[in-house]
Image (cartoon, rainbow, N blue to C red; front, side, top):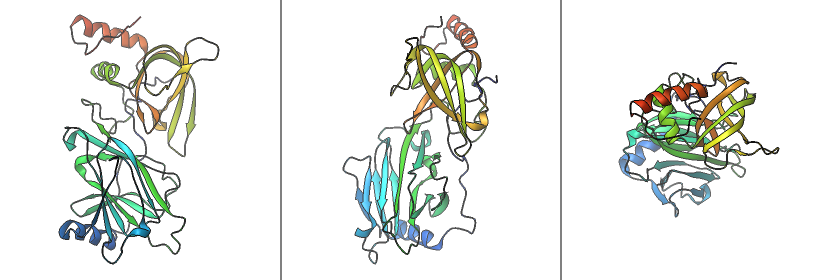
Length: 308
């Protein structure tokens, strides 16, 4: 069995943001530039600062073709019914962390249609999600300092059944554990990364791999775990096993990491991402014991955890 340790970082979907094949839409560029230079866009503020939902039928298209939407939350949703014109979605952190320390991820709804979604910065547009893309459930991530979101409705003969929507999350890049790095997403964690993951992850468990199922259409694998010791978890990822011995649950990782079932105990760590448990560092448990003991002897452990 190949160790699951290569699944170091949680990530989902393509890691490169590509421009439209035939160049940027003239209407989108003009709308973005006009909104920025002339201030001609309307502004809408969400009452709960996390979620925004509205209808394009309320737009006064001749007076304002671009709506400004301001959200100040770590996660939420945008849902645009009957899309017409365009939206500029401003995601602002509710922390004091500067934008360079934050990653934004968006996950389109499965039924999302009627608009293209771009990454926008100073008038430049890079296509993130194309209208009609059947892989629209994929997660796209980028650094907050790289810009915001520009959502442009595509021409439709009938908009009555069109709704563009997506979830978003803002996350800090945890002390070098950038879980959306473009390079080596399946590389093994270093000793330092493992010890930090034990202290900061949403779940930390000791267990074994019972089975692995693959989903080529999502480019992901689901790892089914039997857990013998539960150190920490959020959102009840792992539940008591029916037979009363330990816990069981599943986590997701990239298909390219090639995780397979096999014998042996591992220390599994990871994070919740759009309601799903994503695998982070996962060393063999005996290797974790060795690195933890070595760090303990040198007084370098960032936190305490049982290793027996």
